[in-house]
Image (cartoon, rainbow over all chains, first blue to last red; front, side, top):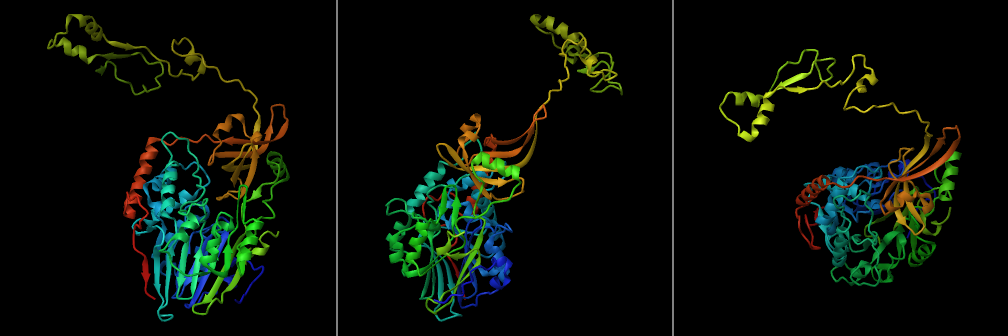
Length: 389
Length: 215
């Protein structure tokens, strides 16, 4: 593996030299953005087509990060984005999704089948009826996205379904790129529907902001195959739930209809958490010492990956990268009297939610083995420094 | 039914010094025409109806707009006195957030905070609030997704004393109404119809087959 590592470059938005390198038609690119507020993956397939998985917003511009990146590259989004996937509906994965769907007019759209069931549609529509809360949520972005999708034949799919098939024979003989879903499993579908039904607001219930269900039963992991020699595993926020073999990674590992092969790049599931880890995924779905990429997550008492998570992932990987540090060194500056009152009320200064933003970009030429290059934008860094301030 | 005295051009809903209005029952005119004779037990009532109805003058506003004239000598109006000027504390907010509860523990809550003062659109901070910071009356409102306002500012008491104040108020948001539900359920049905399958209850594929793109 060769590297073109840039340790501290500015973000792509402020560093055109980073962003203007449009991949050649025979290159594969995997770009991971985040966290800012969420994460998003953009990948380029041989032949000049792009796929976007999830959307997050860049802290400075408040716009969809994948959309800004493709704009910066000069990609014709109306025709060259072939597929948009919403791997699940949590607000850290769907910010800016409606704008993305709106701009990429010919792109197919795919998400978990559970999200087109009456229970979920009703939940989203009913929460849309309260507009008294300043802070939007994942359901409001989903509502805007559903409005955009009217008349566009979106795909609502279960596991092991091919959702994109790109003929790349103009690049190389018999070259084909495919994207296949791996989850959610049938049992997770049923659990999600029963859980979401209990969250549907009833008449005369006091309005509140929709909150995400934990664990997440509709995370859609994806398998990307490019030709004979390159596979990529995108783990979404998929977690194992106990030892139930019909849930999470265990269900995928048991499947006899999923794509076979071993991936050389792994977007680590659920921000590197222990619950997103499964030893058998590393031993049977990934090449020995793959490249691992992830976005950190800080919310409430949760800060991922933990130092133990980072060590575990590095031990399994040849190279491991994070889009940003886990903890942020400084919060917002306020006047002395306000800051003093904050400390009196909550015992310390306010903790910033992840605001640093980073971009990891991996590229390789199709048919040239495992010769990936990687570049960093913004706060992106080796996973080994993810807890450095 | 007709007015025995038409409203003069000066007469309005706020009549000033006008004579009482007199209304005549049209029903009594009909009876006097002799076409229908009322039953005996109703004769008294009919006779009453045949008399002109009189509505006493209601002094809506005195000619000189004197507030006390309006209430003086009136049987229906209660004396209204202007409120006494009571000094109240003045509060000037310096910083305001909207908070959403994301975690509830035994003795504290964790919330993400949207800085209203800075005009943010996304939450950028979070904090752990001891339950002691939450007013007793608000504690039953604490749950995941509950919304509150946190304001920091200066309160000036009537005596002139100025003090810093931190105030957390959980919002008593309106309830979802039946109308909300009807509108929402119609939207949900439209989405389902648009996506092709409204009532599929399985984990099968819905919608278009996979996209195939020629290179």
